[in-house]
Length: 487
Image (cartoon, rainbow, N blue to C red):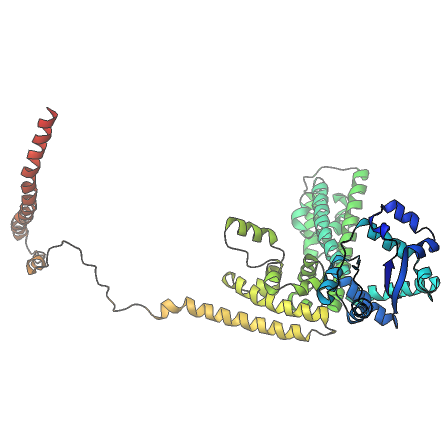
């Protein structure tokens, strides 16, 4: 209805117990003796009421409330404290207007409950039925404004659909493996011939026992003639065991469930594609409906995904790996759910991190346009996808250039300087002449050369041995001294 300011007449209520306060507000006359209306401001229409309710819900002081409090409290010179049920709202009132706000207690809550109970009697001119109708209309308007209700923009359906799709994949895999294992006891050779799960289930339902393979027309279930001929020939020499009609009935029932679940999964996938195209066209165009739906499901909603920065979108879905890397002080993951996008999958392993970062930056912009805009066509998604593809091509070209860099510029004609060794003797011309006699014409000269070359290294050994002999006498007296000391 509007803003109302009440004054507590009976000050004893502020310190009374909650049970006694309830007794004080049993009737409208009792309520009139306890509190009195000081001021009242009625809302002009539903729009003004909705704006006021939104501001009060956020805990902010709007223009209308500020004007009302300034006129009836500040300008009126009231020195009593103001009781406000919402704590953030009371703090903001105190900051902006300087009004003293009392601390909320159980007694104040009980007083406010009594005021709301007899609100139509305490405020003149209010009809109870009219107040209920206005409250209901305001509640609907506020809910519609908060949720921004639109049947085409409900992303909850996407979250449920993609969750069901993942569950169906797991169950289908389990059922198909169970069917292969169960029927494999009767016809084990068919498991290697018919590899697709749906085709396998259809063949089992159509053929039944392996003895009927010759009579069965496999073209009814879309099996090629080559595979059908292989199945028929394998059925003649099969090593499987015989089964009863009751066993076959249960196996056929399981095969029917596999076929039904596969068909339902296909229809659910088409439904998800249509919903994603309607809700997030740009996101769907960039990464596909399945990856986009998983991103929305991981974030909680499309609006929550739009609020995430690109760095969070990049690693969304890899939270465990991220926190494990932070805990162990290792490298953080470069991508999460967007790893399954086609743009990241077609890139080289060395470029996946860079492309995922570029893709996440564009995805965050697409999510914001899809969540807050009214676009139906993926115009922004087309532009961004083209940009990411060009970026990927440029990175691949740069990678090829860097790979061929060492081949195009070989180090020819460059000689490395050998590091000088400390303490080495200076190079002399005699060392070059040592290896000169390499040509050997006759055996006799060879023997003579060997006899001449033989003493040369001996001389070097003698030279090398001379410093060792000089050191030996120095060490000898030391050993003698040690022996004397030991004696």
